[in-house]
Image: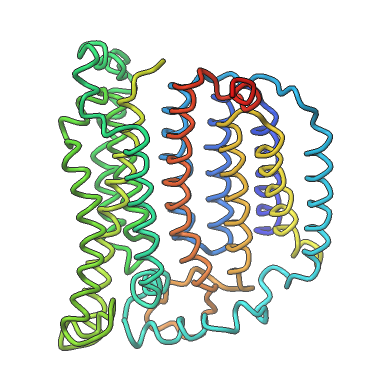
Length: 327
Length: 116
């Protein structure tokens, strides 16, 4: 039964991808991308990846769509037909697809417990997490402790991308003064009653759910990456309903930049604290007298850093696009 | 039923190449970025497909349960962070596209090439 459902969802995924490439209206393409992400999240959930499904739903279907739409508002939504022929690309794509399909027959079957990927370090993680860290969610344990170096690197990439967007689009401090304030305010959905009422009801619960996901990440699906994205979605919804200016009044740009830098720094400092207390970089066992407690506090701290950095980055990126004057 | 075990990989191959087609065959820069994110999602699908273990469940260990099989948590960790990094890098690409539009007045690749 679940197999048939998975096949159905995967087939929808292919159809959506084809529709995205085929349509000439970029607005339609972006909306279909949102649906594509939601279908992908459902597939991840069927494949036992609850944490990944939560991230894909919050980031792919939420934040990515809004950022794409903000870029479309600045560039225009019609795609002109291309002059060069499509035969060349089509030949390349079809032949590569055939080679890839041929290669799949060498892969282990879906769910094969003897696949090489399941016989290397994964059993060790599953076995040692209850003993060394004593938190139920093994994904959080690996993300926060066993592979904390990787996660630190990813947080710095998010940080660097956020700084890059600010460099390319400008920090936007002069933008609000350049535009007539009343005009900027009217960009929100303030004159639409239904989105306003529903949005106002939803926003507190979205942010509350984000905080729950942040602090419950050790026990269930969740953690800093998901929470950061969910809280950012809540604030972006506020900006869409009340206008971007109101959102900046609620959380000023400086506070967002502080979140980005502070989150990345908090992560790094927890790592350095490990060195100062006589352990290795990002070794939390030495933070407390009881190594297991130390691991748990370390993970809570770095997850908080991740959440701050991700939430701050996504909102800074959103504001950088929204503050840009349309052409 | 045996062949259905490969269905995820077939979808991976097709979606990957659909995204790649948008990158190489479309002239519109935003369409190229959409194609790139489809390509990226296909790679995520392949990783997550590999984490599944028959009869397994999400790797959240319940106290007192000993005979439960858990799916592989490692690919999940890699992809979870990659999704968030993916949106940040896509945003950086979009920022560059916005600047290109401000400079050239178009985001069609062939028209930009003509102007240069």
